[in-house]
Length: 188
Length: 202
Image (cartoon, rainbow over all chains, first blue to last red):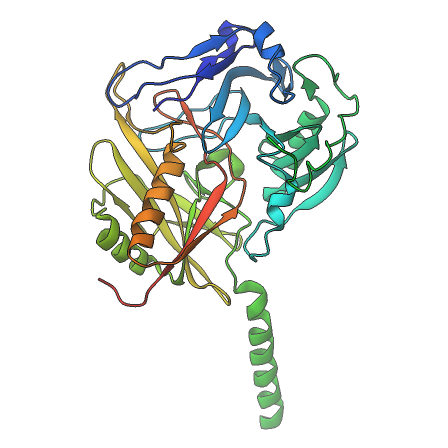
């Protein structure tokens, strides 16, 4: 089944909220597309991205998952996939509701959870993972996840984050985590 | 002279032994497969969403997947896994068919003192894309059961749990999206399943 997906370039920034159809049987994706103004009005949780372009890469797609995962994703830059082999876009910013994803999830006493490098970024609790190629920030009722190819690039992207609804500008402090957001007790 | 040699030998053995516990564990520093080596962020390809434990050698994983899930097809491209700083080609792969199918790539990893023999795996369900432009296999992006990555992980967990294998989930958060050959994107939901294997092959 195909995910909600649209090319951001053709729409400025827009948000696709639903989709269906299978690539295998030849049906086209049936996406409901929501224009930027509606994306700005998305109020399940605050959305953050890095604008229309970051680190020289244009915003090329906005995705939404709402199944076993729950996030809105902003994809910057392109890559070339092959048969049977996907590829990693240069930059991705995922925004999850903090009730579904939070730093407390890594505290499971299993011995096989990833190690966190805890830090503070833009005034909020954050952690680097994957040798610095992933940064997770807890802001308000949202968890922002930045993926890129290096720690320095991830840090620069974090500095470029802004709220899609305009409530938080670039380099401004992000809103502190909502009560319970860090521990996972925040209701969805 | 002989005494000195003996001391040196014991010292070397002690250092080797003492050094082993630091290395001997499931290395979760890299939670993705790679298109090639060296394994870097730019050539990530799939999330690792399954770990076989206890008697989890790659050969047993292969055998027990075939026996319990019926995935016996061996076709598919190769990918690489990172383990303790090294990058290595996968050991094996199994799929449920040739067209739209479940598919898993497996590599035996470093033994772990708690988990035993360990094999890491990247599983997914993929469509054979023929329209509008034939491109081959593309992982499903989403659906009621999650993405193709989530569907295949859950399918293997179901099949092996149904045959008595213990399993549990850990949060790895390896949810980076991967562009597929049909232009769509697929990502894991971030949960990895650990499944215990038994010693006897089928």
